[in-house]
Image (tube, rainbow, N blue to C red; front, top):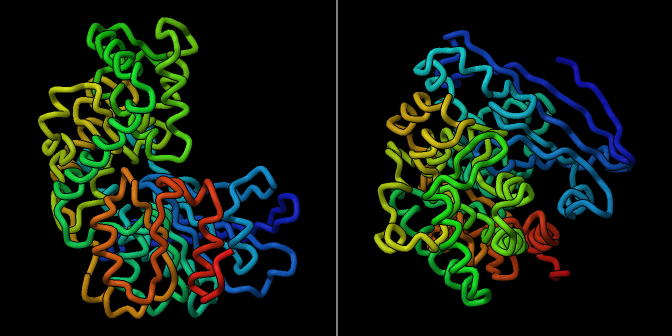
Length: 415
């Protein structure tokens, strides 16, 4: 499909839509989807090399290319060196999105469709877009799940990549999802206790809210009767630089007010805006395994006995019964939890890739365990790690992380 150009302030944005196979392993079956990519260029940057941005997720579209002093700095930093390609992951944004309208299909058919939306298929989409743009190689910036996708890229098509930049996205390679979720619980224990040391009275505030939830007395605007497990998932806020402020505000508020219910609904993770984020979330850690509700299965005993310990990116099976927006996805989600996912990564290929670039590894990351991130970093000797406690998992959106990584990759003095 021909590209269309739009302008936003001083940025030129060229929109490209390609039709590609749904199942890259069997294009002959005839099923196709559309893939959308926006190429963002600053004046004078028309001949710069390409950098494709791979968003966090799974199930999230690329951000809009706003460009102003009030926006996070990574796009400006990228546009100094590159033309930036914002790719909507398949199933999101303008890339044949999956949503509630698809629930008209049979559950097993929709589940099978979703099995083709993982990182390995996104890599194939990237290659189609790169070839469409006429680029022999391009660089990649992978945030969180986008970093997982970059590792899959290095497993199969490393020759297509120039520099790679990964932020909070060095996934475990060859590990079972149970190993990953066990470590994320350990991290959430540390972060929960750290928060309560700072704000000791909030532990009792959380207990009171848990009691209120157990009594069915927290009801959101969409009718959700908030369960204790949903309330505890507010721990995801501790995975961002300033998320603790939202948690603090909620624990200071009067839970009987409309304002509390509204703010709580906005703060809870796994919203129905992008149902894929919940529906096949655990698959992002399934490097050759069925997940079987891993986060539920490996929950430590102290988390089961102490409801004030907050949880993070731990998808719960019970939410299929308690969250109105997720209930229609029940059969699809249950099927995907039992799906035997193929391998995502090839450790030998990653190690032999000759990858060059830099990566931000966050010591306190509650989503991507530091220990496994460092194991994966050892497979990438040409990718310089910046190991930091300055930022949480959202560092790319909160600071000058990309500028530092570009400087590290180019051997320049850190700004």
